[in-house]
Amino acid sequence: MRIVHALLVAGAPLAMAAPVMAQHVDHSGHAMPGTQAAGGEPDAASTQVNEPGNSAPPPVPADHAADRYFPKARMEAARAALSAEGRWTGSAVIVDKAEVRVGSGGEGFAWEGHAWYGGDRDKLVIATEGEGAFGEAAERVEVQALWRRALDPWFNLEAGIRQDFSPEPRRTYAVLGIEGLAPYWIETEAHLFVSHKGDVHARLAASHDLRLSGPLVLQPEVEVNIAFQDVPDLHIGAGMEGIELGARLRYEIRPELAPYVGVDWERSLGGTARSARADGEPASAVTAVVGIKAFF
Image (cartoon, rainbow, N blue to C red):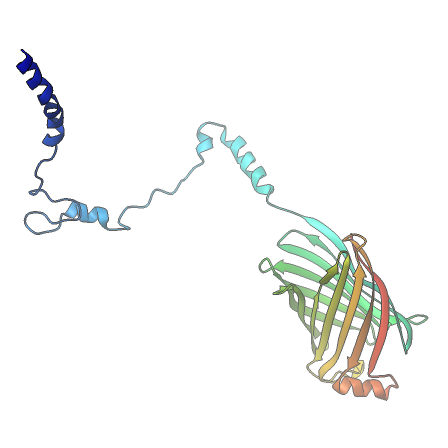
């Protein structure tokens, strides 16, 4: 009996391994996926599995799954409300410059600003700028009404009308240009103006905010005006009309309110400079400025 018992104990592992060993069958006569069958030809089914892009695309959804469980009209209203959340409308009034200028030619004033209303893609913009001397009528007054369309997150297309109320004779211009934020955070503008008299002008401008320390911000800027032909009525010569360079150091009491001081240099060029000298006016001027920048 002891001998029989020993044989049963010794044979138990072999009996347990038998099903596992039985699984290792010779498959040499069968073609595995991606291999050739016995006749030497690739298996069509396996080749179809391995070739990419041969599956039919899934059907395009033609309905909304929620409509199967809730009233369709109610779900359409919910989807419309969700879509409306992505729309945005706002407005702002921005005073870029409101300043007093003091120079060898006396004391004067200047302003520049705009207001806009619209969304993140389309806006209506009303812009104005001008300058003059105290005690006299403003020598330059300009108002623009523009449609602004976002081209990308950085630049906008602008088109509209510009009306000059001073100097005389008055001019009305069609406006086309771009404005936005160039690399290195340089604010840029480039506009083309065509008057109702047919004269064509261009204006290029750039500025950059240099944050010095805390609320102190230094803003250098440049503006170039170009005329494509002589305009005797406005004492403008063809070519570069003039250039203006400035630097303003502002103190941001808060982001929407900042007084500043600075310096501004203007220079007439070419035929415009000759016309200014003929009228007894200097071709260039340097002024100290004190003003405020704000937005609402």
